[in-house]
Image (cartoon, one colour):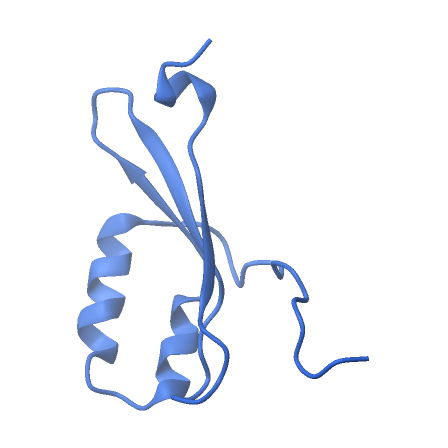
Length: 84
């Protein structure tokens, strides 16, 4: 087996939170060590109030400057994307 490898997305930590909490979390951990950034590993919900909703899930945060990059994904429901 190779080193590291792609283990795929992990289950997010805790329930989804609104984007306003993401802003607060980013402000709180700004300038902190890499360990503090693991607080971002969860799903964040965004809404423009006019029907465009999406979620950002931070699957894994880079643990140090030499670690593999952080992984995240965005989910846009078809209704929000206005796609048939």
